[in-house]
View 1: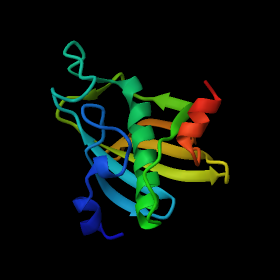
View 2: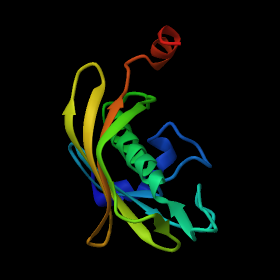
View 3: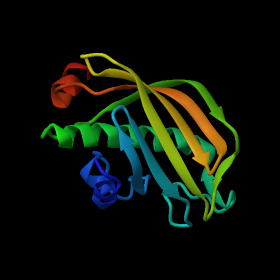
View 4: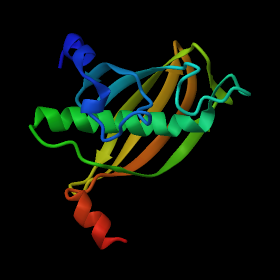
Length: 156
């Protein structure tokens, strides 16, 4: 997928989320098993906190999860499959290097698939950067069942 074709993709066409819960703005790089997304923090951003003058740092895990979902969406589109719901199971080695994502700052979210099973269980190495500064990092565990409805129904 070329840079130009990435720029033309609407995030809502790749992830199962809809406004106002779409937290990432756009994709800026893609290659097999890796994608980079971007978010610009605005006063209208979901979870913006006036007291912090930004978005709380813990929202970074959802930036990571939505970027993982975007990678899954790109792969689904390339294979002519439907976009499927996935589940954030947890994280390991979570490091948050600042208390907020600051107003008017632009952050890049990098995800790299480390491992994936046929069952849909996967692990991603995730980093959020601002230019060369590491803002947050984690290994994120996710699960994307083949049949989401059956999985939800069977596990209620």
